[in-house]
Image 1 (cartoon, rainbow, N blue to C red):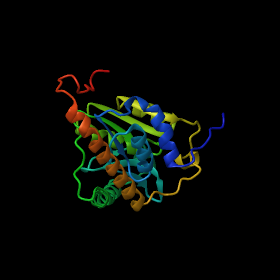
Image 2: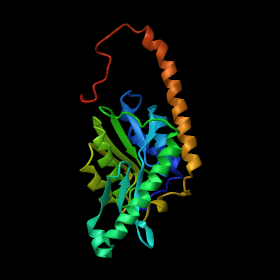
Image 3: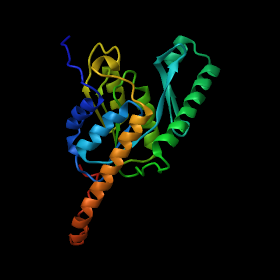
Image 4: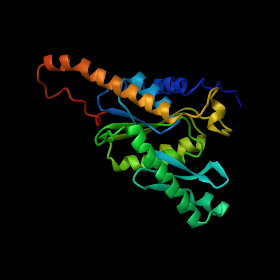
Length: 245
């Protein structure tokens, strides 16, 4: 097995991921949706490079009791959850325990919604290109839950992207979205953190700061684009049709 170079940190990973997503740069119909918390620095770097808005989609991993880093599923905003039945059956996790973990993680999602959004409404995604970003995919269950939630918002195109992923997770998710991008798919995979030199936990404060920076950048782009838009002659052909590829 060839040795793969590790990412310096999540921001470096986002820059490299953005290079694979360069065909979306500067488009007015694209939104990057990062999965908090670790996916936000990656998504921030992607959105900054592509010059598109950044927002979040809150999804929480359902961890095996006593081994919380090992996921048996995930839960997302709105109460939707995905459970890997084979894992639950193999580890004999009782239904009441599954329900207890689901409710606990839903409460955390509600807390983060209030904290990160700062009173702002979720983005309107219908008819847009939505790029889901996380810092890595081990089982892919968290991203899968995000895909199911996102589908309800009726985007025109769903893209899932991660700097590093287990080969199986990348292949399975490719069947669920319009486009799947994984910069590196090491085999054996082991764990996401092994492919980063700096994999410190992302704090709530860091998430809030990056989202605020992204909102400011988007407002600035909107202000700069207004004079050109006002001066341009009226045209029915200037709107990009995301269905035309």
